[in-house]
Image (cartoon, rainbow, N blue to C red; front, side, top):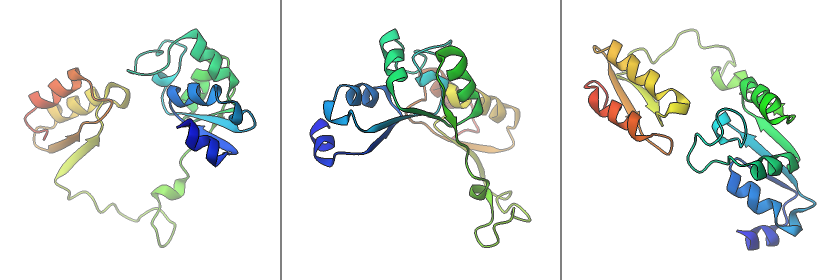
Length: 171
């Protein structure tokens, strides 16, 4: 990785994992680059009550110090912004999904009606504790008349996997 970065000579490095944060902090040719860490959830931060809750995430005082050395923290929710301020004493910028994401592609207005009510499944990608996997399971239990589908990924732990298999209307 370092050779590719060295040859590319980036002016900005945007990352969301502790490994890249560590790697970019020790590369002398990146001293002039702007380094920004995107924080999606509190579990990926090395401080506060959720530190270390995500396998492979940063959770040491040394990593907290590395977070202090980045040029910016981009939090994807106001809750993360407040968490980093309260538990990490770090300033960050909060960015939200622009409302156009949810608007009609032609008129740029809210769709007059939703066209997905006739779909066969209610689905969740990466049902994990951080994303509310247990809530998804509870919903499927309370609505046995509906079909649910789950696509397990990196954050799905064994507890949630077991729950998914035990509920008959989840595929």
